[in-house]
Length: 439
Image (cartoon, rainbow, N blue to C red; front, top):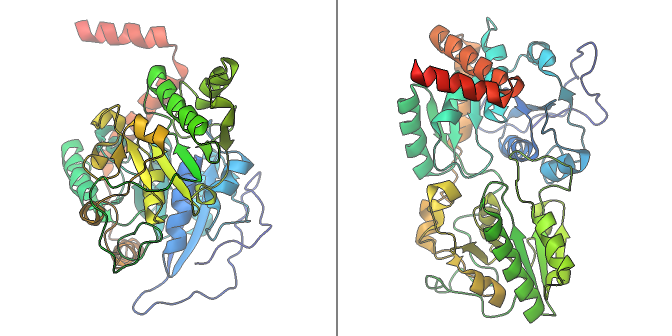
């Protein structure tokens, strides 16, 4: 991996390309170096991009943030790039107007749209207009089920989409066909999952008999970490029930610690808007002096700092669960709200790592079945993604990528509609939709 040297400036004013590092690439047999330029808009996508690029051999990687309403703060950026080749390095921030020049300066073989749909649409529109256009690749920063046709529409110009399990490959292949978005769907492990083979519960030997389904830890955890997700559960009452269970755990286990691992501080932005913040709910619990509430801590920083010996993780639906499982940490997916598409957690049903809020309060936390692990996100890594990306780069260098003129028009129309929705007053949009429905 070759990345910018420390101290290289942000892009501002005249666009001057940072010089490439003089550090030699670590060559792998049979692989030619490729240049990948990544553009992100939020902390979760930045984390995915830097983890992904750091995991690929023979890649000259460039990572940029684009200025937008959910731009991460310096603290969020530091957390996102922790443990990657971009740790302790500045990530340049560019404007949309800079995109064309940035791509021209670096002449990448591949542009990675590691951002939300509207930003990816803008990035790909800009890259696609080049006569020597790069290959266009996108993906999601975590679990991607259910597959969204809307997300595919924003990525209409892409040549490839990265999925993270066999089930996701099948789902996005179908979504590609339904949305008439022709692209290859590539399989890769989520880059933050680094276990060799199937992960095992910490302190269990490889020769030991795997724990039975729905097995739980015998000892009370030293630290119980709750990993929230912005979108689910949506109802405040459900979120209050989770805080109540954490408070009960803290009250029943005075020698243990309960932590809500926050993704942002008040006033900071995330990829998705959170309607009922756990910060506010916890503050309300403390005001009402709910037993145990004053012992719940708020944690900030990289998730890896919380996944330590003696800890367990609880969540409703979050890629954090996969990171926890990957490290052999006891993990529980809360079952009280069900497993369904709108909760983004269907894949965990029957995993062996589910439990109730009563289990959370008791500190009874399980670990997934080996069969589930093999079928979901923990497939063997064989280097196929790097080979697939190398082939795309070769096609880009040879000018063999398709020119999708009709898709270009559709993408511009989709982006225009999205832009109009952001500047048009809601009553006007509502009135227009009613008129259109009666036409």
